[in-house]
Image (cartoon, rainbow, N blue to C red; front, side, top):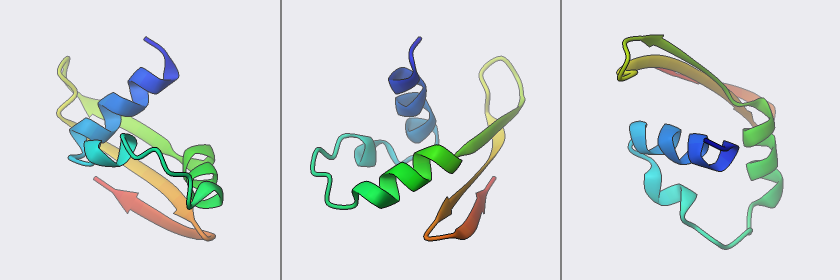
Length: 65
């Protein structure tokens, strides 16, 4: 599995899969900041049902569980 496959999997699990399919790079700097600061921790199970993620956008920390 490559990085792109991992990103598709992560976004699909977070019900944000449609965002990965956008082709316009209108927000290039935000995308680069998001991807370069994204931290994901899978907490349990072989099917990875729970986890934690954090990232920065415009210098502000966002956390999801």
